[in-house]
Image (cartoon, rainbow, N blue to C red; front, side, top):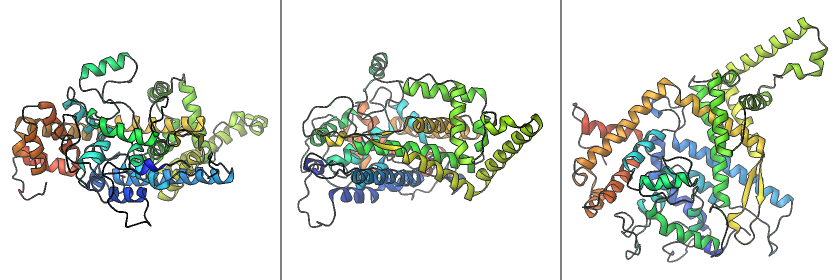
Length: 495
């Protein structure tokens, strides 16, 4: 058994369970998919701006794909539990709950602001000495505080926070579901100087943005940690098995489906991975080494790319190591090289230009990556902290594809202009609300919170930050236009 009674507890207990046919986890899933924050994901950028082309993925479709990959991993692991007859000390078969994993996957990007990572950077800069901003931290905040489902009868939080010291509890989810979205077990420092100290100590790897959770959510984090661990001590960072699965599924989706969008958008072709400029190859090697402390060279990265593409293209790229090839004369060998290269180029073009080839390419990669996931260790004392693993070579392939996708994205002049514009819009809206008296410009519910925080800039900034983060890309553009454009804008656009 990987689940205990305390896992299903909530901050506000349910009065009566009149739906015995529906598990606590399925109830959490329903609350999530019916929430406004989840619906807004359809209007937030994943890789390319949604208004450019309906084909490109947005945060919502990305989250759905991550959920599908995550449930496939769960199916594989649960099947292996059955085949290997793996049982707990009480004789029951192990099984991972797919509804919790699906919940974690669907919820993992809720906290992302408009305009992707540049929007996140803009908000973090505006909150630099006021608790910072980070997408994963905001996801937890949305689910435990900002979404509107239940209210406490009284204020119980001692934390001084205009949003945390009211009586809202977000979607009032089970503790195990909340634990499944805690990717980074670290309270984000309030001040930038505190970040510098953590950087010197090696606790964080960069100053902005710091990945973790806000101190205003520390109380609820402690509550669900205590429940999920049943008060038992543990080593290392807190991360549940469902969160591990979600994290790997997210990496798989980013390394394949976002790459597919890059092919469709004409930013890159599969053959470009082999013929990438030296500086790109070196960047990918450096990024991977920074992540795992390895010492991959540029040649190592090229070898990993060949491994990735060889199976998908079904073309032997390294003809020189082929025993048959070595027996051919020079002219025949040159012809074989030419034919191989030509097939590779043709296949690359087909994948970029034809949806049938492109879907098959992605499907092969995802299937290969999912099959490489397995159970690492079952934690008998704290089942929630059981761990999974992925084959080291496959992990390298995923990270290489992620790094290539990111590098080709950020190096594109087309996207640089869009990203710069998005960051400017988020920053301008924030500054305008802060300097222009947010109590007048914010919608009524946020206005009340802003007024409650009068005299405390930290609390007022957090209210503004929460409001902007909830905007879709299009709504942020329209709000910016209403504030700054010389053209008159409708006053009837709903908040």
